[in-house]
Every structure is written in structure tokens, then in C-alpha cells.
Image (cartoon, rainbow, N blue to C red; front, side):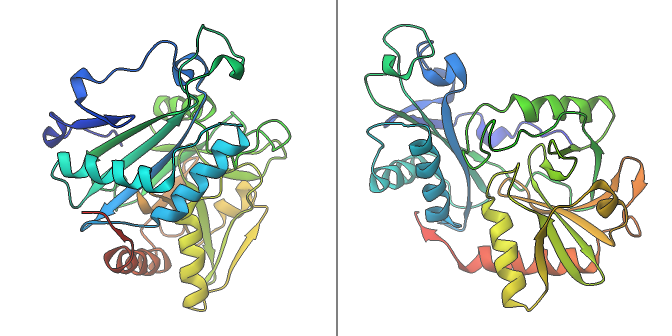
Length: 299
């Protein structure tokens, strides 16, 4: 599962702090905090027929993360939404678009870790790409990574930060072993998430997902839980071990980039019958129904 270049993205217009520029002319200063220390927060949004699904939930998380890192002079929400609209309009985008928002701490007056060196306020970067959901609908294969997710007392996962090295190391491991992604455990040996998505298992018609201990509060994850409540499908948050996954009837991952994606094999063990399961398909269909009718109109 390797994403490919989309020719429609060759002449993208990128928004850097309100300045619209061609992707090839976009630049970030070497004094920016994101370059110096991964000191930034981010969100991934998806545009469906002119509407951004769960826009305010994503912007809520962006703001919470920025405040947790003591960013000052945060851009107002109305400005962020206006800049998203400008970017989409400049690219003539309306559907099947993924938007990555990055908010860095901003420029430093000299290189160094100290946030007091940042004296000009945060920088907002908006990258919108023509990009369909990235995961194959036929099912994913995973391996269990040897890299663990840190607990909240080391780095709270509710901070949606841009330092992704922990996940990148796990992804490299998956690549080397020929898997699509890597399942990551916490320091207690329970499942956190994959290197990029949240995890659900299905057993006898009931769902379970990992507790938010060593994984972020996922927007798509929360939407699946909402759908389960509306459909009267039992769904619990629990400490899940690899044994729970190996013995599941079905397993799927959730995330804005890929929506819902079935997992059919992990650590060379087949999950269920090795095909997309009926519950996964049902929830995927219900999710698509929501994205087709809900969201904030932006174009």
C-alpha cells in the first residue's frame, strides 16, 4: 500500500499563513519550529461534495493541542475557515479532497528549543490535495511493531503533535516486512493503534476499541462509536491485547485519511475468514451515508 502521485496535484496552490503560492514555490524557514523540533500541531480533514466532515471537531482538537503546548496568539477559527475556503477555491476543489492543516509555533529569532525564542506568533499551513481514501477496500495486512507508544506521563497522545517519528519507525518496520501498516502496543502490552489509524475488533456482533491511553482521540473513531449508539450496536472501550485481535471475527481501522478499512491478516494470522466482514461493511456504508449528508459547507 504505497500512495501514488496524482497528476491533478502537480500545480497545487498551497496556503502559508494566508499567502497562496504554487507548491513548487512554497517554503518554510529553517527558523520555523516545525523544522527545528517538530514543534507543531496538525489535523487531517476531508472534503465531500463541498462540505468538510466534522470540521469543528477537528478545529476543537487543533486548538486543544495548541493550548496544551502553550502556543500564543492562536488564529481565530473564522480566519482558519476562511483560509481553507480560499485554498480550495484557488485549487477549484469540491470533492475527494484531503486537507492537512499544520499550525507551527512559528519563527524563532535564533535556533534553539526554548519557546521564548518564538516571538512572532504561529504559522498556519494549509495543504489540500486531490486524494481519495488511501486504504484498499479489499483489506489490510498488519504486523505488530516492536516500537511502543508512550504513556501520557511521557507524552500525552491527546496532543495531536507533528513529531511522528515513533509512528514512522513502526511504518518502516511494516514496510520491511511487506505489511501495509504496523499495530502498536503501549508500554503495558495493550493495543494503542496502528502507526496511522485507530483499531476496532468485532466479536459475536459486538465491537471493542482501544481505550484512549496511548492513542489520540480520533474523530473518525468517535464517529464510529456514534454510529454504533444510533444503530444499537454494542461498542465498548477496553484494554485490548494482541490475543483479542487474533481471535476476533473482524477487525478494521479508522481514520480521516482512509475512512474505514478492514484488516484481514496480522502477524501472518488470518482475521476471521480473511475477507471484509459484514459488520465492517455495514459500518462503512453507514459512515459513507453520514459523509454524504453532514459537514460544513465551504465551497
